[in-house]
Image (cartoon, rainbow, N blue to C red; front, top):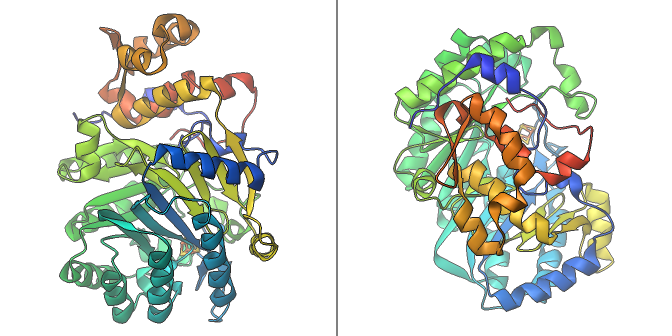
Length: 456
Ligand code: SF4
């Protein structure tokens, strides 16, 4: 079903809201939940015998992109990654001492920063250290983010050899003027060349990230980027909205706000993006993501099995996510935990022999119910009352009396349909799923003012 772009409705509903990579979102995490609770919950998680998903954060980059919103350390000086890697190995030691050895890893992801800041030898060593401590299932999804500007042939071969089968690359925009303004020069020829190498090496899935709303972007200039990306034929594409927040991310002060597209132009760019990718046969998964119809994200969505975690959409709902390295977030079935964000605090905690957890959240009974509803809205584009009733032994209409009342306005506007005890997201509502999910967010209801990015 094609997503429909309704400019008036988008304007009406464009307000700040969480992206629901978790429910409750990370803004609800508290420092009252720390390493002690993490240790307890990790031990308890063994009784569930759930498979694991491992996320490793590599926070280093060779150069700084002016739009960057990540927690990074920019350095050309090789060597700073060594002491970090040693700490990551020690953090893994602490974790494996708490986790049952028969819990297999079904997913592994290296994110950043720039994971290919590590040279081939370090990539090999790092993966060896992981495999020494964890057992992988045969069909594990093993993915990595790379920066093609710094990826050598040897690194790409090594990444494949050590077992990665999925790759994600940032591209953002191909226009030279935009690239200069964001300090990220990345010619199309480099992308063509890298894509060919990755295909020749046999990677199963290749994702490209783009950003709309960057300086000097127009609908027509970005259309040229989108057309060229379609020619590259990636399996998945993510098109993120640029959030200009220089008071939070000082590197963004390098961008002159006068060069940013107006909100009206930005909407027009988004409209074009949705049309172009859908015309090219991609399925709009939701929340900035497109995938080919036979990609497992699209298949899982059709089958109602999609889920979200801190890396975005995932097909593996039943796994428990263990975040390793600075800033990483872990998601156990009943709790979330985040590591220290600064390298100094992360290193100090590991050196003390403690899990470097600085905050977390333990879900309440109510959170469990609402999480299921919100994730079904965000991922599977509908909620079955019966399914929620079966899972939690509640009456949906009684439990969500107020929410169902609030949904009436969204139904009148054509975003959703409530029929046969099911909420269905309609084509016009696809771009506004966050607004539908927000109706069920009890934490948002309880807080008058939150600082989230706008829904579009
Ligand atoms: S956008 Fe990516 S490569 Fe650029 S500075 Fe941020 S993390 Fe590093």
